[in-house]
Image 1 (tube, rainbow, N blue to C red):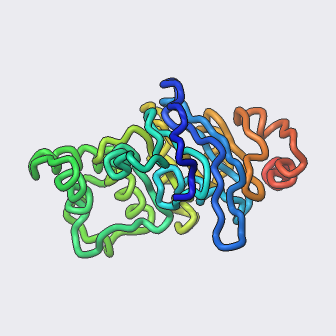
Image 2 (cartoon, helix red, strand yellow):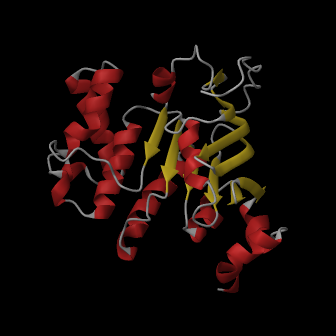
Length: 257
């Protein structure tokens, strides 16, 4: 990793995630340019912006699915970009839901949810299944515990993916455009599961094009443009009085509605 050899001082405990000076390029394309972002425990932060603005890359850098070229990503006070940090151990506390579900089609729903807790958390099969059934119940899918993923709708698959991530008892949930691959008529069931998580106090960072979700569920909205955080603030301010011209341009269709 091409980060500084000197590990920076850990940030104050008031933040669950702190990102400082993050940079990432793919070949000659600079995707993230000196990004700084703090996320407090229990906070719901939504990241909005045009396609190609760096939203998903930022999210993937938080758990090092993409390796930053420079900068620091702290999680629970540990610098994930430091060479001595056990990234895999810290990742156990970071749940992630992708737009493509990523379920194992050769396992039923319950086995999808219990695999990681048994292997990584060393839970017994009985305990892992009890935890999994509780989370499947919370997303309305307990009755589908022994269903094959291929038999589920897109919305059901995404709710299984949410339940599966929760089975690891994460401290934070990352959502990378979780509704973008879904038919419009089933988007609502996934967003409602996410709303329930927010009501329960889960710390969440959500990359989304669902402006109504960003407006009504977020504690803070972050607008990214061309690899930087161009503007951030409360949903009320961002959606009623955006300061930047690029923010206003991006939100113009939503604001006009």
